[in-house]
Length: 423
Image (cartoon, rainbow, N blue to C red):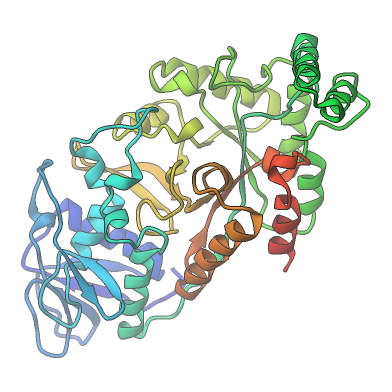
């Protein structure tokens, strides 16, 4: 690891939950973080957990990490300087940081009873981070930055990873003729003659489809690194939620191959794959055959993430990395961090091999749910990015091809995106 200063967490006993937290801190601080039950005598960099020692940074113990199973946990809240906290206690760090980390990363609250939204999802408004008004800040990263400074550890380097969901590649172009002519007639009946003209031009291939931003993305990513991820919807049947071209359509196959030359292709499992997990494997196989890439990455369509079931199905299908950890309805940090982490399955009390990559910002959430124009949306994104830079964390935004095309409904987004990336 980059930092050769090992860190010991002294505590009277061990547990899988505390080991999970220590393993993640090893990743974050880029050094070995180990749990020890014998108090070190060699002056090593250390933290005390639940058993304060003079001259050592101590973390109070709320008891969550010694439990097994799931119970109705509703953490009390407190403050630490300018930040709200969970599991408050006495000490220089006035809350159980390790229990807070575990509670947020494991998504403990999502295993508890809740009323799902129309898509079967955990509502952002049920989350404790929403309720204490810290959802838009990476509070876990901000806590850890305070501790890093107190331990005099080297700072970590900020990273940005761009991702795109391709669940509606084209509006009219390449679709069956009745779709284009149907929209043409509808525009005429409404008296939208200029719109009807554009639709006719697109339907006959004389004008560019407004959702087709793929040349723009190819040009952008000649200058922007690292290479992006493209999560492609490869549903074999269309319905109200899966509206992409068939993955067997020549234009869609050509597009998938093009995306594979720009970045990494990932799976965007179809809407009903949540109930039909066999769809995941079938769609993954189609993408692998077409792209020429092995598919290890995934992001749920409509962010239909249900714990632990979704992650179990993805692991069974050979997915190693999932990018669904965010809300479709609210901007913000669902797990309190921009950094990736391994999934801890509370139902089995076991750290799994699936790596979770959280995202705090999605274009459709900003546009449709929070009603932000391009200027305001990118102002929110930049504010999030500033927090992540200050913590040496990671930013993974979600964009769609159609927000970066020429659709008038997304006026200003392509320009704002270019300026943000190339600033």
